[in-house]
Length: 619
Ligand code: G6P
Image (cartoon, rainbow, N blue to C red; front, side, top):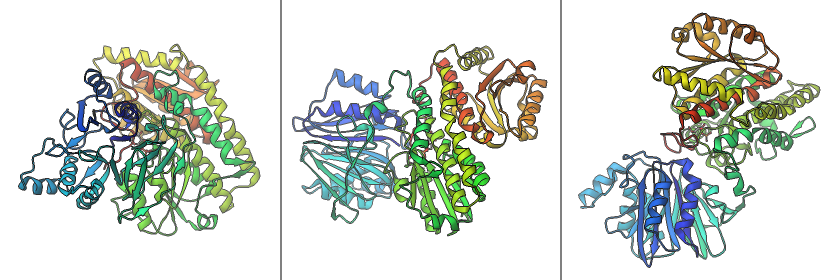
């Protein structure tokens, strides 16, 4: 986690760094800082708290100069405070460093440096890098960084400056992302593309082990062996406006509302008549034909997409699928081999556990396919093949549009595989694609009712808020569903706890009698997903069991189904009719909105919930 940025050129560096950090704040936001060359001297300003605190401080005492580095932090080693915030100086204040990642052997290095009378200012692992570079410095920062990096174990993206070389920044990456933004007489370093998009669309994705040497008018890149290399640049196709709120109060709300267009675009791009087109997927159809089992591996929301993927792929392609969280898969001695396709799903493409799981799977001979949103990300590059979701930048920490985009790709991949394995006829596929094609419009219908705070979901959230306060915060949420919507129960609960800090659990409704029913009294609110489908009758029985014990039910039902309303359920949310298999794409929208409105009623920071970060690049 953490976001880093570097700038060298003719602009006021502090302005570029602050603007870049504002677009990286999703990566961490417990403290922030910048270092700028001012009249030949390096000055650092860093503050605990959100970026606004740093901006306030810089208004009081501005930093003037054209080269600098910046950082927004998500604490791992050392509490969030001004001292532990980056950038970090070496003892003589001649070398300054920002770092994203974890230096696993920092204690060992620190001990050695302490013996050599090195003085440490902070409790961070990152500070060792500044001291190591300072000690290795003999007049050339590039050489000093190269030497220092040899000692480090763990993951890093760093940007380093030295007092004696104004206008020069050295960046390096190993298992944490870093890009170089190429401008005219100016160059940038950043953890992610939105940070530099305002200034340039030409970027170079650094590879693991790469070191970049940037100045205003030059950019040299060296590989892990120190050999100068020519890395091709890519032109970013999307616009900075896509990384802005566009009139919405929060990124999360904007991203929820973007879903119909995202899904429509995916279907348009990926289907030509009954054919599914994954043009960028380097894995051959003949190899996919040979696979005998699939493992889906992911974290957080992407894991929930994977759970739904199991239902979809098994149903259409008739291949057994199991799903793992990346952190379990990587340490479990997983049974994957040449006949296994491992699908790793990741919005950011940088999640450390998923990346490690991918490497584990590849080392065991499995074929690895990634489903990623971020172009050129580590997971996308290291997999045997990638399918991009092309959902545009997702900024809110709580994932929404990436989830429905991942689901859409999984539907299409299941059809693709079914065609290869001949488990689906063209006529069947045509019919399914036509039904899937109607989903974006149905999403629009759900969202159309939700533009104002008068919509039923916002109303129910407000009633929950009052109820919660009246009971001294004693209430909680339970989400129940069956079959293909069960992963949505997990996702609904995750969304709520992520941004509203209300305790929430998701359960397969059939398991209720094996535990969760003990929780039911008048306190919990129970979201029951009871759309039409082959377990509908069973869900109705679950609702009755909850009501019989005094539980409060919010039911999500198919449009026009008044059964539960007639049976005294006050809180009912309707979603348009759709084949059960595609219903997860619709059902999740009210779940996202419910979480959003509950958090909004509490007045919490929805886009940047406490303790979380968008991209978890540490274990
Ligand atoms: C973090 C984010 C989640 C996300 C998860 C996996 O926990 O807060 O929103 O689902 O990481 O991220 P990935 O980028 O791998 O999909």
